[in-house]
Amino acid sequence: MQTQVSDRVEERAPLVQRASRLPYYLLGLLFAGLAVFVAVGWRDHGRTFDEWMQDDYGQRSLQWYLTLGQDRSFMEMGEQIHMPEHGPAYETFVALVQHFTGEIWNTRSIVGGVAGLLGVVFIALCGRELAGPWGAFTAAAGLALYPRYTGAIFTNSKDVPFTVAMILTLWLVLRMMRRWDQPGRRFEILDYAAVGASIGIAAAVRVNALAWFGLLGLLALFYWVRHGRGLRTWAAVREQLATQFGAGLVIASSCYLFMTLTWPYLVVNPTSGLLNSIKMMAKYDWNNTVLFGGEQVLATQLPWSYAPVWLIIGSPLPVVVLSLAAMGVGIWAFRRNVPIPAGYLMCAAYALIPLFLIIFMQATLYNGIRQFLYIVPGFILVASGLLIYVVRRLLASGRRTLAGGLVALAVLGQVEAVVSSAEIYPYEYAYFNPLVGGYAEARHEYEGDYWHSCATAAARWLGEHYREYYTTDPTFQDEVNWNTLTEMEVPDLRPVGDGNAIYVLSRQPKEGYQEIHAVMVAGEPLCRVLIRDGYR
Image (cartoon, rainbow, N blue to C red; front, side, top):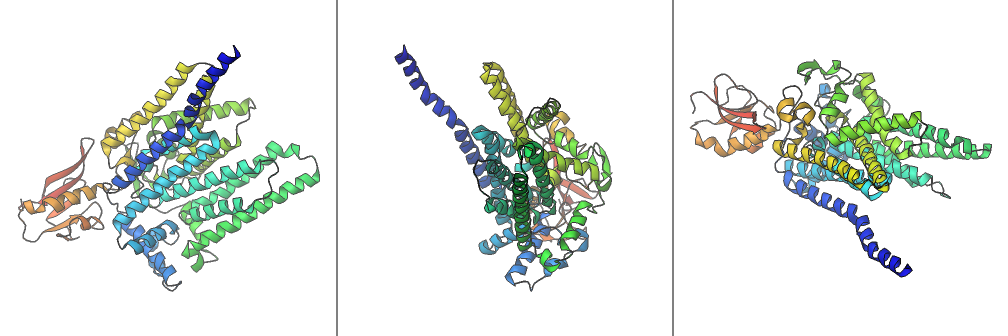
């Protein structure tokens, strides 16, 4: 009998071993697919009206370094756009790569794609800290298949890099929390220096990253609430206070060091620069309207529901449903005094506290999710953690069919996001889930192609076909991107800005012009190529 049992155990061992490797195989497949997407997709995703300004800022910031602080032209950018107060860390890095490649726009797209891929790597590391290999895979899949992240990696050089830097910081904090609890572990200054450096670099992309100090303060308070009673002597209390004070000092100093090294504005204005940036970002004076719920609303007077609604309608359904369910589980656990792992509490705080601050402070927002995209990974980590926990509990209780059904529903929800993204490719950053009818329906009620990158596709068509129309002095005007970047797609035509162009790139029909081409997305025209009457 013992021999038979032993034989069965040995037969099952390879199966168990292969099953334990499955999440790593899937993770490798996911990364391979994303790498192919980056290698190919950068050619398809068009330029945006914001990129010329960001690229100019990066080039000027790089010159400050190359001239050892003599060139301060980055300070001369228009006051109304507050560019010096925006951290240039990522833009400077892109400019440095461009300096070596000798090329601008393709380099910019490829660097953005690689940065986006790194974000998926970092969230996989976060997921592994929380729930092991399956946590790594589900978290990575959640971000890789989040259209408003992946669809913007080639062109959004502010919000996506900031999100990547914030995910890196989150992983370092989760790692620090785990290592802090290891028995016999001594004070490790490198852990805290790494956390501080990542916060500093993130803040040099967008100063909002300094909110991490509030989260770390809550983490310290949480430690005293959960473990304070276990410190029974004054000596133990003093040792823990000294450890936390030392950690805070190292984190703060390394943060300021790396922030200053990557943000010339703070060197030029050492006393007031950081405070000016914080004040500016707290209430950004972008006094324009945005389409929300079918109405044009001032960006400075948005309803409190703006951010929550966008998170619900702009995220794949599995993220929405599982995040809401996780909130319900959290409330239930709090009322029943059921302990929740500290890592998940940190991820929840990372997502919810900034969201509450956005609502409470009535922050200036526009372009859908993009300005608070960085909180989405927190929801993805909590959602994937809940999914793994429930599936494991169901499997442990023998309810495999129910567990399989739950996984199938999550997969189907992600498939919907992929299919919907393919339908509007390469404008995935304008994704809407089925709750609002997808892109075709929701774009009439909410901001759709807010980057206006459709102008690139229109310009490419014009560059290939304008010779089919008789013109003596071919000119064009890009009313979508205001003659900034798309002229590189039609080098033989002369861009003008006086409204007398023969060809016009426009989002709407224009009196005195005939439409000769339209960029179609989900069955509707997104950008048009028009020719002036009399030239057809």
